[in-house]
Image 1 (tube, rainbow, N blue to C red):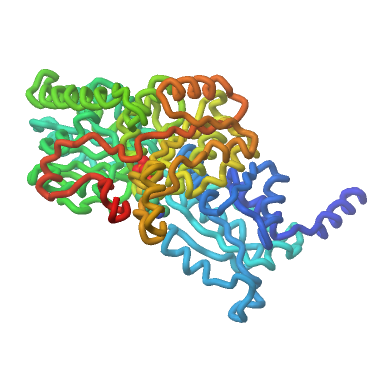
Image 2: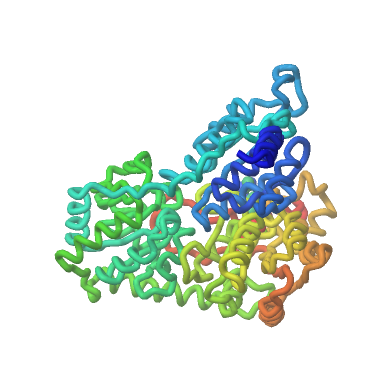
Length: 570
Ligand SMILES: Cc1ncc(C[n+]2csc(CCOP(=O)(O)OP(=O)(O)O)c2C)c(N)n1
Ligand SMILES: [Mg+2]
């Protein structure tokens, strides 16, 4: 071997690498593209090393929002979240080190895998396992704990062996006999219904599910984040008759949708007591929750739907489009749509939710991402704002966690910028929901993400007071004792938060102002904007004719009667 090569080799063998660089390289090897976080001792170096390797680093204002953003990137790209936490130095463990905490144990409850590598050499193996665990089976977050001393420790380059990127998740299929049985239950249904969940969106099952809907002419309902797997304006979408469809169906096929509170647990009185559920899910533990299903199909939702389609290809069948069931659903939809339209057309000021969403829907680009959180804002917005594409709606979902909106919007804007340039992100926030992560407006402006934030402002959580009632209340009582806990300060100018960081802010009170500001924000693709939309503080959902709720004596939202909370003499 020539001498120069030998010299080069010995040089290289002495080359040192920091723990931070090993972490960054291990992440890069697993094809991690984005990193979100808030830096500080000891993790700053990890972010710097990641950037040097071309991983995009997005500095957020709060770790919660950073996690929400990373989880949304995972949902949009199929590469779920791994969380890396800096922890105290190993040599100071149990001594009361700076921020000492049993992080690995604490995270076990919230993640599929939680571990601290035993050495720097072990980092690539642990990171590969974390990434693999996060995407195999039902996806979920994983945690890797990095002690502070690992970050700066120097190692010989040759002592580190990187693990190849893990293989994509294997595709599992359902048992053939179960598929045949499911097809037979569907064929014999009198009032069938498909429910398309977030799992179907995540599994990219849009093509096969749409084929099943169209080939068998079946009515379907999306769950909140299942919206768009088959477009909301598809003639077989019965969202506008949701309660009726759930209440009367005799066979329901669930595609990646859990029978949790969003679907009223699959139980009477919201469902027929003898309804037959067919559950299609990637997670075995989900099957049989709350109900005894007629058939369970365990596997990848796209693959299993294709298995079902094979059955209907072999022996073609379609549900009669002129059946009594279809007529009932169509009539109910017509009634409900008319009621919403009537509310939307109300000219009185302040506006109500329906008027606002009607005007937003009119201008919404068909391919935009819709992010939403809030109570009434999210629930009503979901019924009016349409999704035409899968994985284009992100909302507070199963946990109903307020605070996710801005992180989700940032994630969608980044993914859009990299993979679908020109797509817009509309983030529809209740005024309370916005408050949870409002400072991320600075993040949005720093990275100049042209997100359109809409704050539907009713001065409160579900409802609020108008300025006069608020002032009246303060005349005779201190706010801490007199103000209803659901009230926020009336007429807050949230648009000024956007203006403070260089974005464009609008304060709107009328449909005309709303239309104009929407037009302007949609035209301007160069910067973020925020439209603060004032609505009637006491506005609520349209009354739902819901036998079940009436029976239980429940109201859909707490009503803030004017007498309640105002001073006793008022
Ligand atoms: C993390 C978290 N904290 C508190 C709540 C309770 N909560 C439910 S909805 C909501 C806010 C609703 O108000 P807003 O966002 O203004 O929407 P609105 O109903 O007024 O349109 C809150 C605080 C929650 N869901 N999540
Ligand atoms: Mg509100």
